[in-house]
Length: 396
Image (cartoon, rainbow, N blue to C red; front, side, top):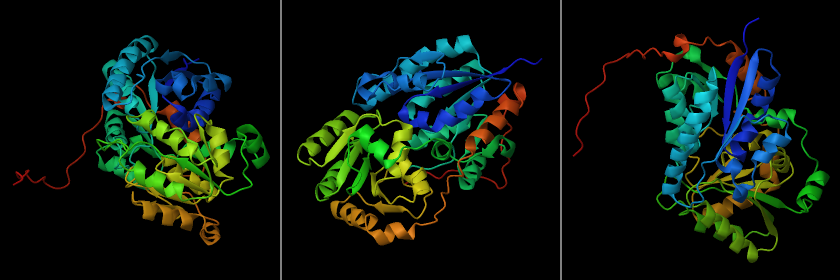
C-alpha cells in the first residue's frame, strides 16, 4: 500500500482561514493524504481575537503554531514579522518535510513559508495567483509567490492566463475558482434571527458593513481614511465595522474607528466575526463599504451592493455589484447613496460571480492528490520567447 502524501497548509489569519477551510476539510477526508496544518501570525494574537482557537474548535489537528507577529503598528514591524516567521517555520518544516506545501493569496507573511520551502526543496502549491490589487504590497507578494510555486490554482480564467504569461507552464496552472465561495455554498449560514441574537444587533434597520484596511502601498497607510470616515458620518444607517488586517497602521485605524463610533452610536466594531458569521452577515445587510477583497470576491454571490473605496483593489476583476469610489468624501457618499437605492439592488438579480461556482475545494484536492512529485515538479522549464526583447533604454 503506497504511503500517504503529506500536504502541509499554512494559515496566518482569520481571512485566509475562511478561504482554506473547505480545501482543508476535503483534503483531510481524502484517502492517501496526510494533512498537516501550521498556524501563525495574527491567529496567535489576543489583540486580533486568538483565532487559532477557531481552527481547533472546527475539529482540525494543529501540527505547529508559529509565534511571529510583533505587537507593532509599522512597516518595520511587518518586515520583522517575516523574519521571525522564517525562523520558526524553518524548524517546523525542516522537521515535517511535507511532500507539498499549500499557500494562499497575498499576505506579506506568506513570503516566509515560501522562502523556507524553497530552501528545503518542498514544492509549493499556490491558490489565487494571477490577480491584481495595485494599491497594496499584496500585489508584489502574490506575484513573488506565483514564481516561487510549482502548482497554481487560480480563481478566474483571466488570472490563469496571467500566470501562464508570467512564464509558468500551462500544465501547472489550474482554474479552480475561489475556495471562499465553497464556504458560502457548503456551510450552513446563519439566519437573520440567529445573527441578531449572536451579534446583539438589529438587522431590521438599514445596515452597512464596513470592511476597510490600511493601504499598504502608501507610506501613509491611512491617507484615504479621512475621506471614508467623513462620508460615513453623513450616513444614517447602522454601521458594523470589522477589524482591519494586522498591517502597518492597523492599530491607528482601530482607534480611529472607536473614536468615530463614540459620536455615531448606531454602530459596532467586531474584532473577529468568524467566516460563517461574516458570510451570513453579507446575506442580510444592505451594502458593504470599504476596500476588502471580500467585497470584490464574495459579495457578488449575495448580489450585495459594494462601494469599493480608493486604490487598494485597483485592477481586480469585478462584477456589476461593485461601485468604485475615489478616496474623496463626496464621491464615497454619492456611491453609498446609489448602493442603498432599491433600484440598484434589484438590477443585480441573477448576477453571476466571476470568481467561481463554489466547487474549488474538490478541484484543488484532486490535483494535489495526483500531481507528480519529485524533480519533475520542482524543475520548471523556461518560457519560450516568441519575439526578441528590446534592450532597455535609459530614462532621461
